[in-house]
Length: 54
Image (cartoon, rainbow, N blue to C red; front, side, top):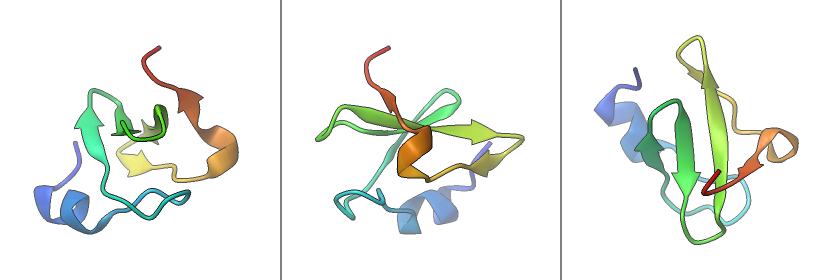
């Protein structure tokens, strides 16, 4: 689970905008991409992003 304070400061590496928590992903609805959360750690790498919605 991602701490709400951490979620407030995390930003999308592509457009620097806010992300939304959706299950095991941090989602950028503006670009329709999602970044996985693995073992409680957000993987904010553009190469790891998946198309959203899945």
